[in-house]
Length: 329
Image 1: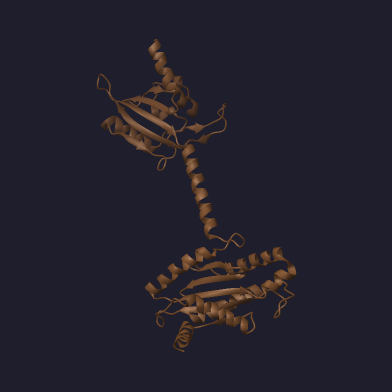
Image 2: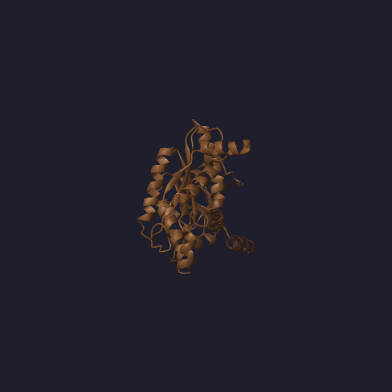
């Protein structure tokens, strides 16, 4: 081997990508040190053998098709890791070649010009595993940040910020599709007294248990439950009429009551109970819908006035008529 050839070999072996050259018959003419390291196959064993048989497992069909298109027609090809994660049996391994982890690969296949016009093909292989891991990490961090921005940290329900956006979309969809939409405002009865007597850590546990119970009662993907603030929750329930809303509200009240969570300072039951205010948008009756949340909130106030541990429904028209009367007076 001449000095120049020696330098060329050192350069090829020091490059941090895999390099393979094959001839028109798919025989391997070049197999650099990177390939030796990540395939576990020495250049001595690989050279002058068919590339299809050189690896411990055969290359993927997509790789072989791209290689043959290049050798036959001179078509260059790029196999991205997005579509072809590991076309070749290459691994990230320890010194003893014991822990084999498949490398995510980006492969470029190009033609080489020779003096005798015979076909040669250069295959360049880079390890995309690090960039893949970095991308997954960034995506994971992004999802965590997104979750933190829309989720209540205590109850794991959606937070007020998410509710505000979701409510606008749900209401717009109900108006366009002409289907009813019910809003529930849910409040834990005498929760301040519970906190004062049992302590805030115990109060937090109650919030978590009530939140979990309310969530267990909804089954449709379109239903949304959020923590509205303090001991108050809000539900957005598409395609729910006033009649069905009252039935569902009573189901929620029963589910929480059956938890039998002691509350000695409650003035109605010696257990944790909830009150619910409901208002429903009916596309056949209402044009003005801006007061829907206010109506549900007013209904919750009435439920408390009437003794708590119950649901109260306030028709949207009733609140709008009351507002109009006040304005006229």
